[in-house]
Image (cartoon, rainbow, N blue to C red):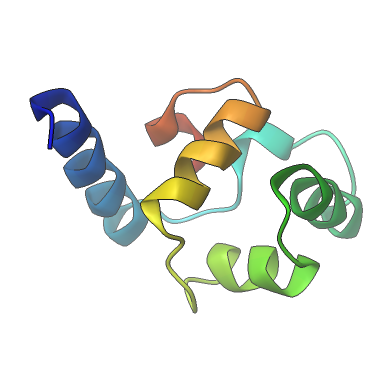
Length: 80
């Protein structure tokens, strides 16, 4: 595994555990619309997005990178 990918992965998991809150990249719409938009753009269900937001499910690193890419934010910014 490349060093930069490993560092990104470690930062992501630290952020997921330590940083409370919703998807920062989607803060301009009502919650249900944000969740559906995130689900549609990332290819997962709305329930998955809700579970991630409520810390009931930790996304795979692949999904986390997809979320950050779709919303054009840094990985760490997508979950703060």
